[in-house]
Image 1 (tube, rainbow, N blue to C red):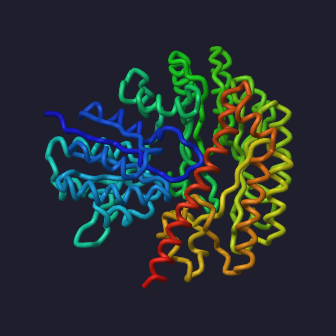
Image 2: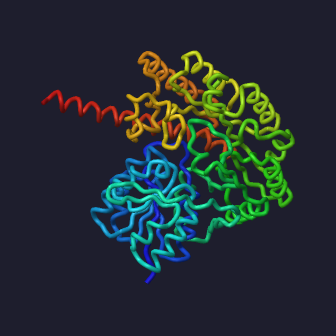
Image 3: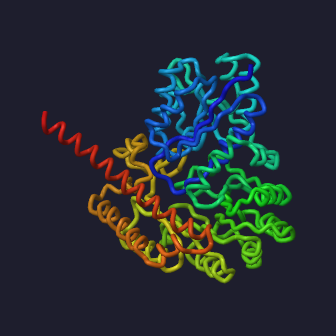
Length: 478
């Protein structure tokens, strides 16, 4: 009898993009070769309801994506509840957060954490489990796993990364369970919208990012023929828009050009968006190729309007490079979606204001994040000792409430500046008109999602404030 597996995209209170997890989909496509697999995407499902759904049926293995730090409260509750109801179920997790902080899962009911890239480790794990059952001694010897023994966390050597990522599974639009997941996102976005990757990894070392370590400082890319095949499948299945989730689509500029040429040559027009590094594209012709191949939006991450902070963040460019890239993108007819970061311990209030001004001045679309010490990021080393506790305050992540500075005046000022400038962005008539009436569905969605996320953040902050109020009232009554 085939083993039964459940894969779960967990509940999450706030995140920037609500769209299917390619990593979890890959694991699903691998597992279905060996087992009966179910897939639940609980991204927008309330935690209590999500736990009820997960625990309504017994599985041999339950795998949870523990990627985002602000999803960890849900992951922890899953672990505790699942092990209470089904103590014999093997509970596994993987993703960015769990790779760098596996103890958060292992001390809360999880049996194994998959470190870094999981596809190969997962397939070996399934084969071992199918042959030998829940033999923990045997399973714990597999490369790429972390586990708990005698209350101590052990990490095995990492599994070598997949050299040829063309070997990764191709999206299967004929799979009924996957179609149910896709339909949730189609309904949410108002279009048939999927994610795709043409490369993995990044070679830079920005000190607030954990991606480089997650992919072991290596960059790999799919062949143009493989990417074309994915576009053809998407076109056959009436996909209307694609988000290419690469950390940098053009890190190998020649490969990016060849991908665009293949799409143009085969007349596969599907609007898409992606991210590029500010210094990645050296040939202006690349932008025109991207536009002709269907690229509507390019995400660039200036982070700050201060060269001093760019150097502190270890960004591989300076403001003069940013302006050149902005001009080239605008000349190609592609829209810019920019990203900023505020809240560094050394950041001056004047630098915060300049960053917002730069975003308003150069970008039609933009969003700003508060600098957060996520597991795996080098910047954690600069966190003041009295703020180390923040690393485990998972509920504070993703809500613009974490600050590095010890200066209370500066913290409060940045707190309100952030909210003031976001408010100015959101009340801009041009933005909300595009969010609801722009004919281009991909552009319309990119404007509209910012309003949705803003409302989620406001709601979660109010909810947390009410919790604090209840706690204060409780102690006052005592």
